[in-house]
Image (cartoon, rainbow, N blue to C red):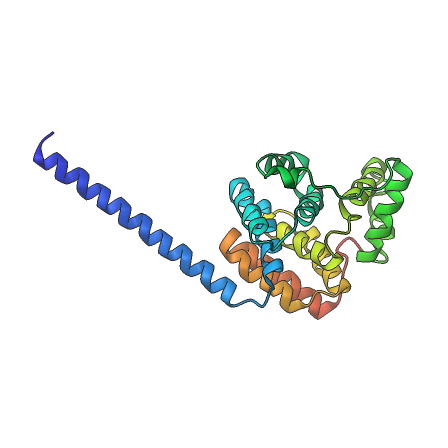
Length: 246
């Protein structure tokens, strides 16, 4: 190998290293800025970060962030399983199962209480918890889709009952997780709008939701952040909760 070739390779290596370092600096600045400008607790930050990563389909980063939250004792194994169960409704079971496989055994062994396995009981539980989010929600969804897709409505509420009835997270924390995931998902604006409304209904503040938007700039980009910000603004101005209602 000639001296010129060696010098060229060294120059390329140094340029690549400098570019990587520059990108690290940009990332570190962004991470610092978004978290310094929010008022979420450490627990809330962990819930939001994990849910944003799952919504953005960042499996390995989600696993790493879950492990960090567990090691720091920010979240318990039951709370982590509760979070993952919650998000099966929004990203599907295969993605959540793939994440769970990469977690420590003590998380995989954690249990949450489920409703008795009959379709009627699970449907009743799902309906009950859905109405905690929106007292008229069941009637609205049934009116909108019951005739056209009865099989969809019939299976939605048992699944919702399984995912939502656990008590390791509060209803506000569950909504924090749901809004974060839907924000990063980026393809579910009606559902995001609905859950912004229900989050306000169960006691989350607009400022807390804007904190999610602020953090989402780091994990899923500015478009998703401003989609959420717009939904919050529309709800706080109009007080309309359910986008499926006429």
